[in-house]
Amino acid sequence: MIGSTPFSKTTIAHWLATGTNDSLFQPALNDRCTSCGACLEVCPKGLFERGPGKKIRLDLSRECCECLVCLRQCPHRAIDNVGVGFKDDIKALPDEFRP
Image (tube, rainbow, N blue to C red; front, side, top):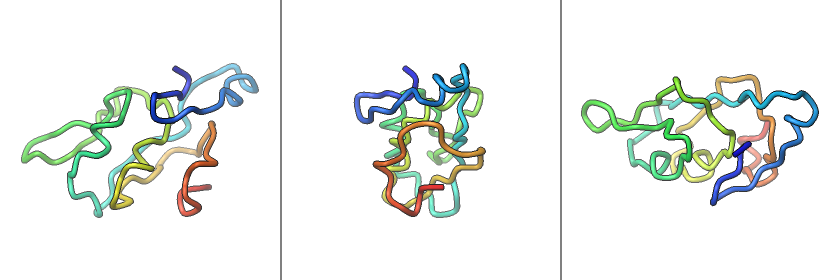
């Protein structure tokens, strides 16, 4: 998929420049998470799941494809990037999410 989803189209510039499609974005939930499930509904890789007590948690055994739809869909800005950056098209993100 190289970062493309039905919700968001991203570029392949990083892959063309480096030859790798490893994710630079690693999502982490912050204390603003209310477990509303918006991220769970849109993540094409299934990184978000319901844990005990119906709390949202991350399955980091799967690699993020950096579509960044979770950031756009989260009404509480509860997702942070603890990785080293973004490799694909971030023009659609609000300024506060841009590196």
